[in-house]
Image (cartoon, rainbow, N blue to C red):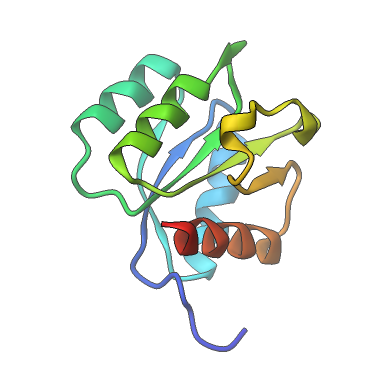
Amino acid sequence: MAGKPLEGMRVLLIEDEAMIALLIEDLLGEIGASVAKTATSVGEAATIVGEATALDMAIVDVNLHGQSTFALADMLFERGIPFVFATGYAADGMPERFSGVPVLQKPFELEQLERALLAAKQKR
């Protein structure tokens, strides 16, 4: 991989599975980005997004402990924070308003993560 186009990017990680969060954190480090904060519930994520001033992007698990995160995605969109969805489910169930948001199918690899984040970054 030549260069690190995501070098220094601060990412909000919204993920309820600790092992997956640790894996994503490691992958982000390999592409030059870092986890600014991790949220494991919709309420915690909403607080972080509402108060956040030092976030460049977000990775949003579509389902946190059985709760949809689409309202969080709306908040990120309103704040102008680029994001990608991560899901273990089929991407065809996404609401139309998020049709342009990159979706990572779990499990994903480093290259897929980097491509999705770059795509999200370029859309803003």
